[in-house]
Structure formats: structure tokens, C-alpha cells
Amino acid sequence: MSWYIRVIYLVLVFVPFISSAPPPNLTKDYYQKTCPNFNKIVRDTVTPKQGQQPTTAAGTLRLFFHDCFLEGCDASVLIATNSFNKAERDDDLNESLPGDAFDIVTRIKTALELSCPGVVSCADILAQATRDLVTMVGGPSYEVILGRKDGLESKAHKVKGNLPLANQSVPDMLSIFKKNGFTLKELVALSGGHTIGVSHCKEFSSRIFPKADPELDARFAGVLKGLCKDYKTNKTMVAFLDPVTPAKFDNMYFKNLKRGLGVLASDHILFKDTSTRPFVELYANNQTAFFEDFARAMEKLGTVGVKGEGDGEVRRRCDHFNKLNV
Image (cartoon, rainbow, N blue to C red; front, side, top):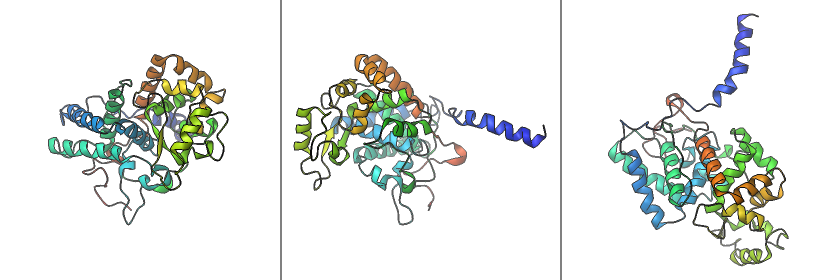
């Protein structure tokens, strides 16, 4: 076998394996020497914010997911649009990302820049804040490894096809999750984050107007109709994705799916589809199993597409690149 054939063989065999492994520079104590108060500053910032605005946890979790599923956890979703570039956050699929989630990252970044300027990336801030907020509202704790760099690109036109939609089938959602290395079970576990989420009425309007989906609980459908009656003119109207315990991170979301209380079509289909129903049943009956699987999936999510020294930076402001990129 000639040398160049051997090289091609090695590339084909080993590159996929290497690319799926967590980057070696991520460590739990990455800022121990360069920013020793990192953990405390994040915690001390998210605690009062969550108290003042209880939807912060859900919004930050969603923001983190949207960031990681498009070319990795690199804080590209935080970049603001300018006259040269329409950024990710201004794509239609991201227009409903809540301001409180962006605000908490900005607050943490401001505090960290006073303590250790130019050290902590926005990507690490978002990852750490998400974990702390999920834990604050009753969810499982999990390890956050640190050392991510902030991405150098944010393009709105790249969003479509990389985020699951509110009306997708299980196979369509799974194809998106698989691109990021997730299994069917992990898809269901991560969907459990909707236990503290909200959705704008337009995302599920087809399930209640003009006639309610017969698979939706009739009384609940009536409540949603009343809530969303003016959704075409009042686009700010939202509904809790867990109408029973919306402020608590628990397994009620899965219990609701069994009772016809899944708001989004993509939620309801998890119970209806025979491939995902066993996982819904498992998590509905066993909160510990859900918490364990959610925690592991979140640890995995935090390593997706991470940027290192060579292809990222530590932004001075989370909504702007250090240098103008077009």
C-alpha cells in the first residue's frame, strides 16, 4: 500500500472518531488560576435575576440549546446584527429567544470583566449560567467543563435546518439531533427541558384553530384558545409548555404528554410515536431516571462543536466580535 493511500485510509478511519470526542482543553477548573471567582460571580449574578424574573432559567436553557445546535457552543447566537451581517439571533427561528436570557449573560460578562478582564469567554458564561439556573429551579446538577472560545461567525441563513421545529415528526427531529451526535433517548431527555419552557401561540395555533386537535385534552384546548384568541395581533402571547408545574424543573412534562396536555405538536408526537413512547413512559414514572439522563445529555451538549484557541476568541462584549467580521 503506497504512503498516500495509507494517509487517506487513516483520515477516513480516524477523523470521525477524533471529531466526536470532547476537546482536550476543556476542564472543570479551567479558570482556577486566571479567574478564581468565576463560579461565585456567575452564581451571585443569576440568583437575584432568577428571583426578579422567574422565566430566566427557561429562557437561558433555550438560548444555550439554540447556540450549541448551530455549529457548536460558541456564543454565536449572542452576536448582534450589524449593517454588514444578519446574525443568528435575527433569523425567524430565533426571534422569540427571550431578552432575559441575553441580559443575564451580559450581566455576568460585565461582572467578570471587572474581576478578570479578557479571560472568560461568553460561551463558558452561557454554559455555566444554564447549569446554575436549571439547578436553582429544581433540576439536576451536572458538571460543566470550561475553556470554550467564542466563535468568529454568526450567520442567520445557517439557522434553518439545524434547529427542531414545533411541528416536526420524530424522524425529522432525530435527523437534526443525530447531526450533533445525540441518540433518540437523548432527544427525549433534552425535550424534557420544556418542563420550564413557554411557547408563543403561533407555534401551536394549528392545534387549536379553527378546531382543536382531538388528541389534545378538550378542557386544555379551550384554555389555550382563550389565551391565544388574539395571537395574530398580539404576538407576545405565550403558554407554559408544562401547565401544571411551570416554574419547577421536574418530570411533569412527561406526565402531561400522557394526558393530552402536550402543547406543541413536537411534544405530543413523543408520546404518540412508538419509538419514543417508551422513554416518555420511563421518565413519567421515574423522575430520577429523567434527571440522570438529562444531566448526561446536557454535559454532552456542552461539548458540541466547541471552539479552541485556533478558531475562536474571548470577546470583550458578548454581542460583538473583537474584530469586525462580515
